[in-house]
Length: 408
Ligand SMILES: NC(=O)c1ccc[n+]([C@@H]2O[C@H](COP(=O)([O-])OP(=O)(O)OC[C@H]3O[C@@H](n4cnc5c(N)ncnc54)[C@H](O)[C@@H]3O)[C@@H](O)[C@H]2O)c1
Image (cartoon, rainbow, N blue to C red; front, side, top):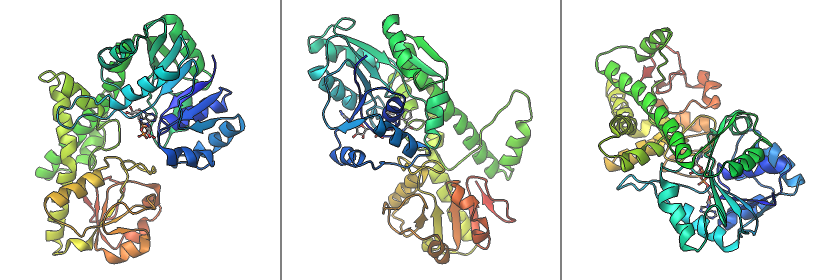
């Protein structure tokens, strides 16, 4: 195996490129974002993640390079975005097709293209094989396709890259074994070989399973709120049943996976994906539910100005700086739709200005609000509980045990 060209150096591509290089592979990382490539070239990380700095140093020592160009080689790992079309809910394979076209301009004969990006089942058959054929390449001869979806979670990426089990889908077992060997240079988890469509579907099923289970907890929260029952106590007791494991409710589902991938199934299997669609709708309704709760809590406390309310947390998950599609951003979008503005926002992990009325100093933020709405359970807030105890607290994450705290 020659050089490995990792295409797309975002949340998935960068750690993958770094861990491969730090374990001795000859890696070139390619991204069409000039700024990002320059930053990486200057040894600056593009996002915060525990342990990333360390493998970055090791990868640089082993000679990893970053560029905007696709390089001529025999192995590509593609980690570009795969969003869904907001109208028809189907996958938008544009980035993937563009990356594959660029690879075909430079790859050597017999090259292996590993697609790590999450795709809906049948995407490689429907969109990728035809693009390759149109370029005059024969799959299985000139190019080999592999789908190796990624499972890692921001906040614990390096650990999960090492210990998660992985799935490798191929047309050809020999090619699968080659790629298994490559991943086993750093992955100690079990690596399962299967066909491409099974690998595609498995990844989407995993995230859909998570979405449905979160939706169940969120629906319970709404039912319990409507009839004055304590959802957390009910879930705690129910989970003592040996075969029950209800998740915790929350203010919504964000990020780039769980809130996206189930839509692929809804878009491709309308009429069949019913629970999946209902779960998506429930989770998407949570920011509005939180907004209503804020409104009621304001009324109960005779607070009339929304300027007196502070949202804590802007990211989609605790202790990461990834904002994509976060419940807080969804909530602020909903407020805009209601023509409401003025609510204050603070997130200790976000150092740049993202939204209106955003604070960068926690004490100042606390000083200016009467109600604090906890939307993310960053370690920071857990360590600063005594600072907020005199506020009216609406805790959507169930991390605060003071008397009189409002919950979902
Ligand atoms: N973020 C996660 O937690 C996570 C987890 C598992 C799987 N995934 C999947 O991994 C894939 C990548 O997600 P991400 O979060 O890393 O995305 P990202 O947006 O963080 O990174 C994608 C990168 O690809 C680059 N890019 C786009 N098109 C390109 C092209 N044609 N050529 C070169 N570079 C290109 C972009 O500039 C960007 O830097 C998606 O399919 C996603 O669903 C993400």
